[in-house]
Image: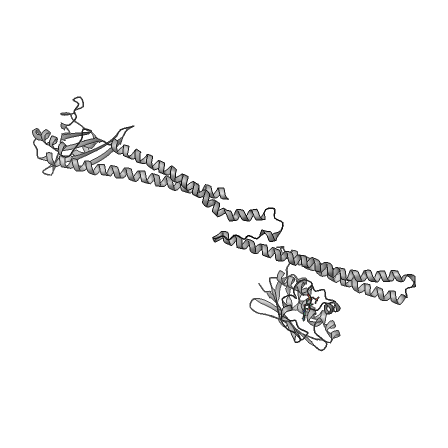
Length: 464
Ligand code: ADP
């Protein structure tokens, strides 16, 4: 990343410097030539005005005066023609070059004869020449042309010296910019490199947390990373607690079974048949308990896996049928416990769901309400819906749950009163299973409870 960043910086800097360099050279060249043009045109116009009214015999004298007055140097050639393009004045010192008396039909003289003023720059291999021509006007008519041709090598020299200086400056700027891009890229990528170094080969998530603070997106990245690590740590803690609880829960019935077996073996053939029968009965209960725990654990594991599985096997079902089914299968248990179970669900509520899981969630909540409600109490089931959710409510007049415990009852294997729960055949997994099933459907569970008065559990299932 660091080198990609440096490369990007360098490409941008080189592009910017090249554009600025080109712009500066072009601007400088056009300023110099513009200046040259203004200068030449001013002088040539003065000459054209001066000689307009002068008779041909006095032209040479006027020209000599003008050349001195206008400080026109030896490197300039001045030609004056009449209307027939015949040269009537030429300042060429070399007799072979002097074109006096000859017709000169160059394009610039021709345009002068047509009444146009022109300026031109001619560049050959190492000579730059600028030329200008203007018509000589007399009584509103063209009476001849003045043409000046000058060497512009000076401008060329200024331009190439400036270009050389700009080139040195460009190289220097590029070097500084490249150096700075190394420094800045290093500064930007340092927190990320730190992050990678911390993660690489690190097995202990607690040591992965980054102390460094960053700004902007890097700061956010560090913050999110630390949050992720915290989440992983809490998941890991929960997993360890779950494994240790599960082992403990499985060990308890196994120890009882082992104890019963040891007792039967110790008693040997002399054991009275009633005692053996009683032991077998106890053993059977412990095996049932083990089976319950294992089934609940399998259920939870399947739901944990389903959370991340996109292809859930959901079908359309009527929640009313499920609630009625649950009530039907718990009526006998409620009656045996002397608890009045009532049901309020009149309208059909269709939803896409995994029916078994919803059934299990509704069953566990209602079963708990009956389990934790003493003789003579009341458990009411409601099924209704609002705009967004189907709501299944179970309220009881049972023992209730204290404020401190409410947040823990959904934890796996958590039981408020271990002895009581064991008595009622609870595994401490009923609510965890219900919550997993509801969350699998995008829903949630609310609990209101008061110790000694009763509890209300509400399951919300989104309809869409
Ligand atoms: P269990 O198998 O012990 O019932 P759950 O996960 O179903 O396990 O419930 C966890 C704990 O929450 C229970 O041990 C019980 O203390 C408490 N609890 C659940 N439902 C109720 C209720 N309706 N009234 C009072 N306490 C409840």
